[in-house]
Structure formats: structure tokens, C-alpha cells
Image 1 (cartoon, rainbow, N blue to C red):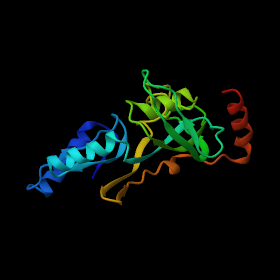
Image 2 (tube, helix red, strand yellow; image 1 turned 30 degrees about the vertical axis):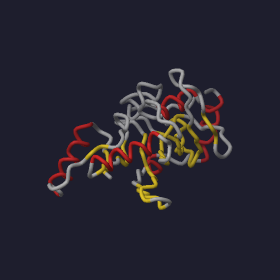
Image 3 (cartoon, helix red, strand yellow; image 1 turned 180 degrees about the vertical axis):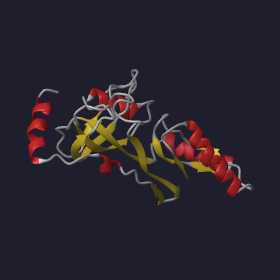
Length: 206
């Protein structure tokens, strides 16, 4: 497993180079990919056979992936919700739930904090930009997602989407689990009593 920084593919290559320097006897084979700007767990195999096996697990939906994101607004979801809008005519499915609500402070001076929420997303299909598209269609774009309505650098210096957990059955019924934390919850400001009224008004108008 490799942890993928959010800033650019250069950081990813840097991690891979460091890994190769630490283990020069190993040839690393990528098993899947993350969207540009997404941080988190990325799976590599140490053999072509291992990479082929892992890709097969991804293609047959045997891999369970968990993402976390900060989205604009406060979703009115009760518990786990299924988002299943087709993407480019292909069936797509993402399960989401709200973990925390609060306020997000934009980077642009003078802009007031906006309602935002930390959510968990579990895609069961692997369409390009699936989580980002499903959240936009649900009315809650990811903070910093300039391609899908989440604002650009005026909102944040990065896309607030992180691949937090991956689970796959590498040895029969025994699953391998890797988790990498993100710290998104520290970026949400809890609304004060006076802010709650403004927050309720802002939510009602979105």
C-alpha cells in the first residue's frame, strides 16, 4: 500500500520513488488508481500475478472502499442513503451517510463561513469521478471540487476527498484491511449559538 498525497501526481511519484529506494529488490505494480487530487490509500502489488489478482478483485466488486469528504451544505439524509444515478449511461451506486456537520471557512478574506458536512461514501461501482458526480447531483458538491460545483481555490487549496479504507480478500476468506486517516473533522468549525440562526437561514435558501 502507498499513501497518495492530494497536491499532485508529483507527490505520488515521490512516495513511489522512496518506496523503491527502500526496497530496490521489488518491482511495484499498480492495482488501481485514484482521481487526481484525491488523497488516501493506493494499492500496489509486488508481482505481475499479484497485480492481476488484485485487478480481478476490483473488477468483480470484491474490494470494499471507504472514502471521506467534506461537502457543501447539510445533507438531510437519515442514516445511510443510496445514490444511484447512472453515469454516462452506466449503472452506478454509492452509499453515503453524514458523520459531522459544521461550518467551513473559505480561504478568500471577507467571505463568511458556509454550512458544510463530513460524509462517508462507499462506492460499489467504479465509474470515473463517481463519488464527485453523485454528490453534486445530490446537491452537495465536495469542497474544493471546481469541476463539480464545489468551488476552487477560493474555497480550499485541495479537493476534500480522501480514500480512507480499503478491504480486500487476498487470502481466501481472510480480508486485508488498510486505513489512512485524514483529519477533515478538524477543518469543520462547530457553529456557535449565534451562528446557528445564520446557518439555518443559509440552509433554507440552498
